[in-house]
Each structure stands twice: as structure tokens, then as C-alpha cells.
Length: 194
Picture 1 (cartoon, rainbow, N blue to C red):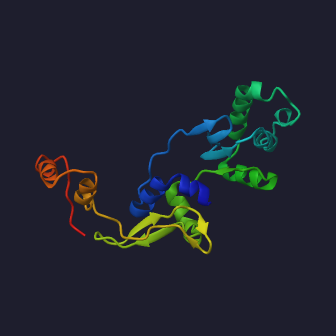
Picture 2: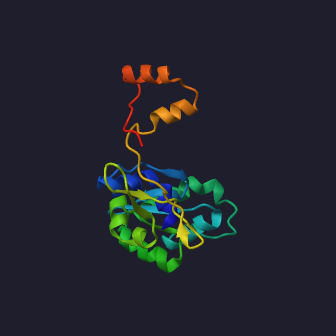
């Protein structure tokens, strides 16, 4: 669970803080690697290597593409992906989740960030922490992995918009006059001081 949450840290943080669902993107990194449509929702396939792709093919009922000795596998990947897409559309995400779990395939149903947060698993894995801010408590996503017995997460409050603008620009070499001009023209928002 850590890897997908960390992969969408921005979206997870938005969902944790606001409850608003970010729009899904059509995200596929390679054939059999990314989000695919099921009968009712979406599934994420993790075909990182040929043996992963072959396991996916076997699990979805395409044994003709699952033979690891098939040297033509790569040359037929577009055909294979199209066949997998057709098969995935025949069952619900929940049904495919059961198949993938039994077949030990790295794939599964896609949940919205809100559904993932509501499942309780991110809280159990300490993937979401509440930090103090001037605007009140904010839920934020940690880095998504454990170090020794703890998680790598925020160690301070959530700054307000523009709260550190002046100090950052001074560190970058801007003068106080430069910064005053940026504020006067509206190019820079200066938030409350620490």
C-alpha cells in the first residue's frame, strides 16, 4: 500500500485535507503497466517485466500469451494488450481482485484517494499524519515508507501561502527593495511571518 500512496502523494494529500476527488488521469507507463478499465471501474496492472506480463495473461484467461518460452511475446505486445483489455472488461474490479489475489499477480482494483483513506489502511501504516498549522490541523501524506520503527514524515507545521517568501527570496539573492517591488506589483504574496 505504501508505494501507490507515495506515488500519488499530491493527490492523496488533497483528498486527505479536502475530501475532494482529484480527476483520474489516463496513466499507462508501458504495455500491461498502468490503469485499465474493468466492467465497472478500473484495475492497475504491474507488468514491469515479461514474466509479470505473462502472469497477467495467465490470470485473465489468455494462456496462449503466458508461455515464458515464447520469444515472440515482445513483438506481439500490442495484440496481447488489446486481448487483455477485452478480458478485463468482462468482470468487475472486485472479481478481478479475487483472481489476482489467488493467482498472486501484482495487479488490483483502483480506489479513489478518498476510498483508500476511508479503508483505514493508510492510517494503520502511518501514511497520513495530522500536523499543526496556523490555519488549523492539516492531514498530510508521509513519504510512504518506514525507517527503523517510524515513518519519514513532516517535522513541522504546514506553512500558509507566502509565509516564507521573503526569507527564501533573500536566500536567493533578492534585495529587500526587490521583494518590496514584487509585493507592490502583486507578483509576490507575502504571508504572515513565523
